[in-house]
Length: 304
Ligand SMILES: Cc1cc2nc3c(=O)[nH]c(=O)nc-3n(C[C@H](O)[C@H](O)[C@H](O)COP(=O)(O)OP(=O)(O)OC[C@H]3O[C@@H](n4cnc5c(N)ncnc54)[C@H](O)[C@@H]3O)c2cc1C
Image (cartoon, rainbow, N blue to C red; front, side, top):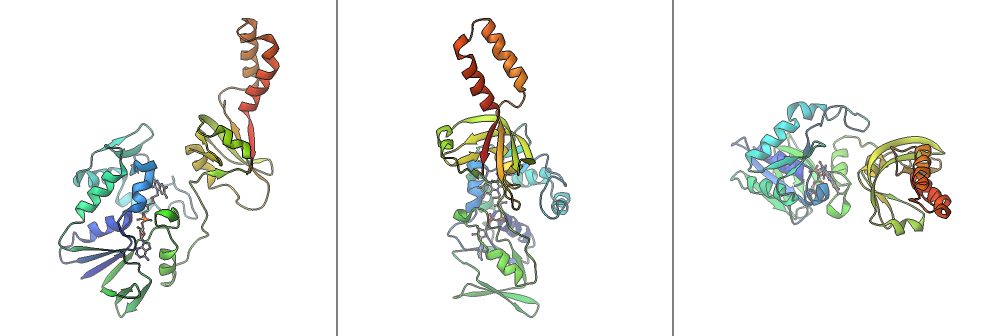
């Protein structure tokens, strides 16, 4: 039996390894880029956050938030770690539950997968962009315009549109829609926010803990607390990734409000300043300006 897998990313490689457990199967792994797992190398900021110990049903977004439930029941984070350990990968978990390779290098994850794929019944075919899939009776024919392969079973693991520079494309959606699947509305998620205000560039490189709120016509639409990173063009960091999917969910005036002192109220802040002043730790004439600066730091409103 020939099992074809389109896409040599994390999912395609894992599917190939699982399919090859059947010794009677010949696995063909098609990858359009010159190398396997390019997106994997960039994940987790080059460290590859390969699972999360707290991953559970209900912790996902989308039209069907429980969609991941089935996969998690079959292959939970513990099983993921055992599977990688079986291939020789040592991992380390952070307090947040995020798990990374012990080397802190995404390349280690890719390497163990690539080495594991070196099996007699797996053939990796890189530089092969599947442009068409045809049904031939009960099997499939996979083509790239020049060459074609017949497969008894076919797995489409082309990934999504995210990370176009790393290989993300519409290809998988198009192939699947030809077989009658539907595609929900695509929109960016886990992304940075660009701001219209040029002054933001002056804060480039600053990192802080903050409460970030997405406002639509002045009302809170989404909020989260965590680390923010200011960049040349706008806002980044985990707290922004968390709320970015909720931006521009329709018409209206969209803005992001940041509270860089989330645990301190305005009143507490003023009391603290007065206290410092009473001990002459702050020069009297600077008091109004310091108040203004700190209160501005407490609440920054950025139009998106
Ligand atoms: C910047 C960034 C950081 C991320 N960080 C994390 C993280 O830390 N932790 C985490 O869990 N997830 C992270 N993700 C998400 C994660 O990368 C994806 O969920 C994961 O890569 C999906 O794997 P995949 O195999 O489904 O798709 P992909 O990794 O996209 O692989 C699909 C492969 O299919 C190939 N392909 C597409 N069309 C064809 C075709 N027609 N013919 C042949 N080959 C084709 C592509 O070239 C690609 O190699 C991150 C994503 C990005 C973009």
